[in-house]
Image 1 (tube, rainbow, N blue to C red):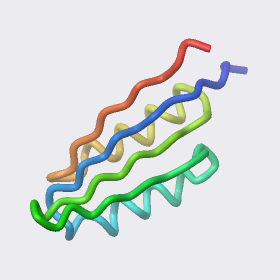
Image 2 (cartoon, helix red, strand yellow):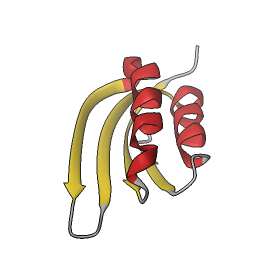
Image 3 (cartoon, rainbow, N blue to C red):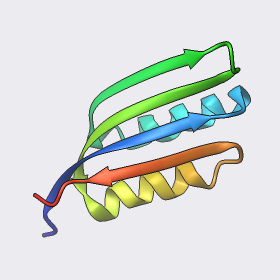
Length: 82
């Protein structure tokens, strides 16, 4: 069994039409979620989502990979070593 890691994922949605697809993926991987903060930045017409996750690197990478393939969605993640 692979060790679980704690991490954060930052998501910037540049096209708000993609928000539904992003939210569907977050829901699909809800077993990883520890916390979520979403901030609509109306002045720039974007949305920023910050996720705290706890899971295997394979599962976290699967989520970030799928999110990163959505057009006009930027994703960055950081995982702890413990």
